[in-house]
Length: 99
Image (tube, rainbow, N blue to C red; front, top):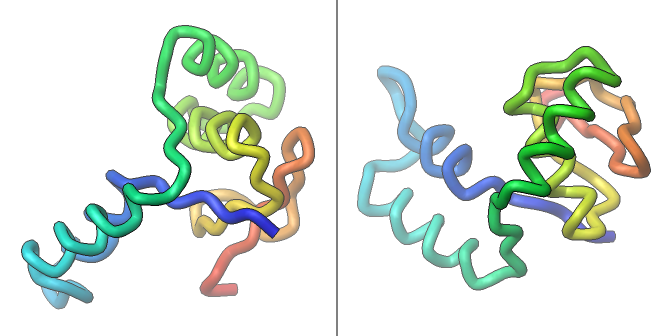
């Protein structure tokens, strides 16, 4: 099973709020470590696919862009709390790690 990590979301999730999971240095190291895995670069075709996915499934553009990046990376599972647990978008299954 392949998983996708969104680097910018990883950093924000680790450092957000009044009681962050990690300080900025640790979050920076986590993002740098995650960057060693397969990376999908955002380009024009991916943005256009994200727009199409957002319109087709009626989800936010940013969520659709992440779904398309996961699809492009041939990921089976996308861990997110922003979409509904169990939803499937073009073969990418959503799992809410907090559900």
